[in-house]
Length: 44
View 1 (cartoon, rainbow, N blue to C red):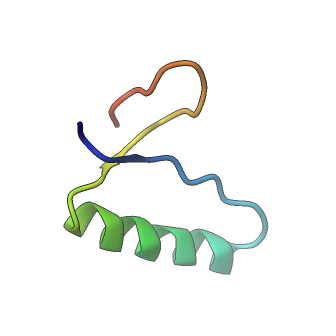
View 2 (cartoon, helix red, strand yellow):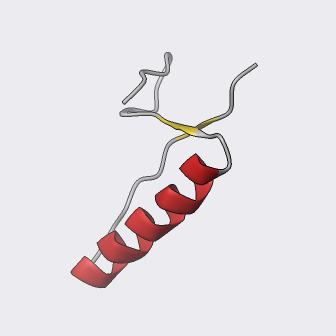
């Protein structure tokens, strides 16, 4: 089973920057980024 992450960011540009950094760390560890959280996962 592959690991998938969905990260929704609220707030200012600094929060967006932090989210990008976290996603970079997680993708480096093998996580796939999902575009949407819902009934189904969609690959980015």
